[in-house]
Image 1 (tube, rainbow, N blue to C red):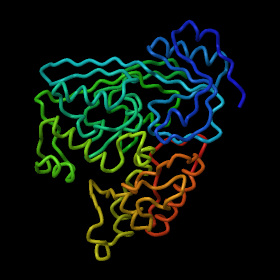
Image 2: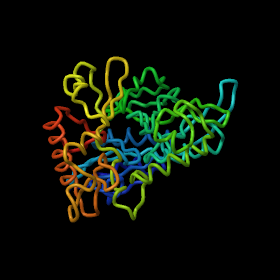
Image 3: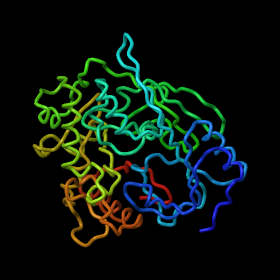
Image 4: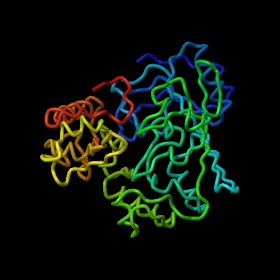
Length: 364
């Protein structure tokens, strides 16, 4: 790969640059080739200046968050990769509860821990999710019956192609199930978040049966935020969803496929009630049904740990929804296994699974 010409203007901006970085070093899946130039920006001003300098030098540039939701090609990226590393974090109380301001570069779980320690409720179910706060907006992260859109008031955005900088409301971001209006907008950088949380020390109503049981409450009830965070972290650890350098089950992007949401008539055509397995997860909501991708994968013949010992890439031994790197895996290995699982579910059930992570230089 040819080296990127380092724009002289970058040296005066206070950014950090590297020419020896790889995606394998910067992503939780630990695959992906070399990066032409890594640029870390610790302030908003350095983000603006770095993008301008790179554009003037005609260096192709992409944005990277915490690297927890990306599958990058083995050949890498010949241009620049820009990261926002600002980590400002503050909270205030008013008549409506707690208001939290967070810079995009702060670690997501660090943000959640801060809110729990401050007695603020709303993010506790999202404990343990890897990545940075900024990237959480693009895919509307969620877990255990909660999602970012439950608490997000607005996100500070900068469009480097137009120069527009604004606070976008959660409504205007069209946050959906693992999606947003800016999910695939590479030119839009998230600079910060504004979150509205409860200030009574209690969680949001717990909507997930497994979590409610772990906390010892009924679904729909609230519980102390510290108790909910502790239970969520324990549940995630049991499924290999907490990062651990010594546990290859955590070398992943988390859930590789999103749970499919089908229109009710289509869901009933594929899974008529008289033939639907009794234990099949089935979550109806306003004319649609959400299915469990993990259940579909396992019932299609792909068990935990598939394809078995010795494979460089396998399904997690703890959870069929995660594709994991066993230490020597490549992006090509990940894509091959993902294609195999996807084709098997489609052939067995007629349901096409969609990948959750962003794919850079690879496709299914």
